[in-house]
Length: 117
Image (cartoon, one colour):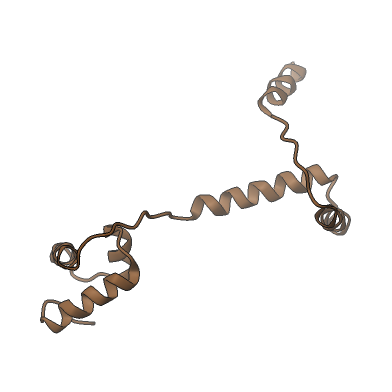
């Protein structure tokens, strides 16, 4: 019975051939020797798993390009529904450039709509 399980798991794996510069292969070999990996493959597999986990944590936001007045209106509406908000939250949630949000909030502050706490 265990053979069936091994065969099933092996079918799920796929081979991906890659070429690496010799310098990188030498570095991989050093790491394999230093840290006691069974093989280059084990190290590369673990490195990929680690990097995939890191990349999955990255939040990608497609920035919108809107007018200053539209941005101020959206920021006003956003802040009306909250007690307070961080500038980066506003930028992320409204998909606006952070520096642009800072400018707009400074204008809203001058207009008396918001205050820094």
